[in-house]
Length: 244
Image (cartoon, rainbow, N blue to C red):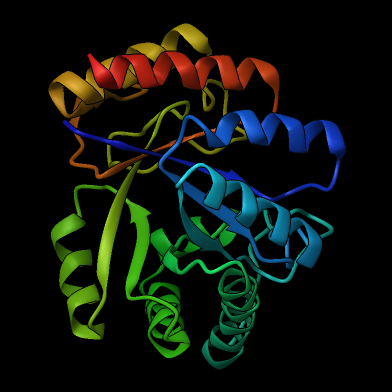
């Protein structure tokens, strides 16, 4: 399986973290850039976009629920019209910054709780798809690769959207293809488990679920995390696995 590497970036103004992100950017293919509602601000967006341009990395908007207090990791009940407006505002903010840097937004990837809710709830997923279409910034949505991929493809086609299907390097899977909740033991893989999962995805297009079952995963892109120097080293190893 040929996989792109994507990473959530632009989520802090800390100077040390920005140096780490500079190292990450040279190793990835796609940068999911925070749009201000869970993290980030216009200055950080601009710096992250310039880094992406320097390293020829595709950029995507990474919008969330309006919830900086919880870093966008808490579900929120929002009317579809309000959620669509919220997402369009964030996408527009990044689009404006991207245009200023002579870049185009290539895709949209929701963040945190919104991403999880989108995968579980068809109504939320429809609102997200409607927001992507209405934003006119791009026509591609990044969602999790699950056994329901064919259904999601049909839904996206009805909106005139394309999909990037995403797998996760360091997250454990349940038998139904969803991720093990973060609060559950074993949800986040250690380094050895992560590299083993990436190897399995590369060579078998599958993962081993938390119960020990083999689960086929047909993905286009692999999410990695790069928020510290150890994570950067892990990305280097992941890149080597994918190149083998």
